[in-house]
Image (cartoon, rainbow, N blue to C red; front, side, top):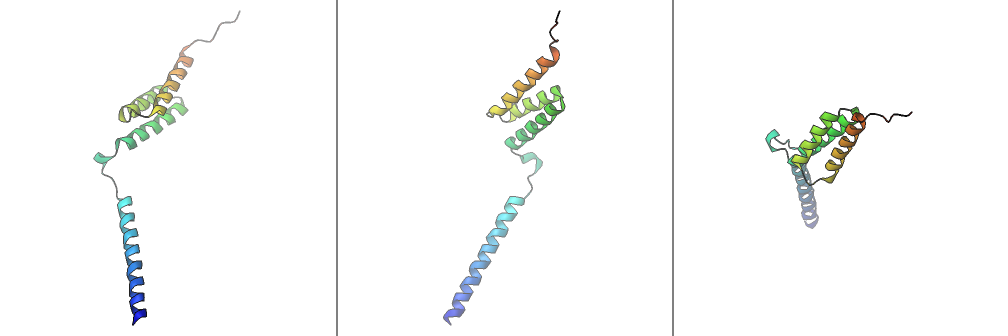
Length: 101
């Protein structure tokens, strides 16, 4: 009789563990409605888009994306660094080469 109780307790605990895993998995995989996307996520998307544009040489688009990222999440210092990089590249493009005589 005692072994039956032990087996029932083991089965009950295993069922509880499986139920909690499934519940946690469902909570983590639930889609987020578009209106409820966190600002940090939107800022990260804008930052990644800015990096892509910067790598492609599209400086105006990169600047716009980095400014959007800064507006969405202003506490991130790396966004300001990338904006400064865009400024440096724009100055390098607009500055004429030195004339040698």
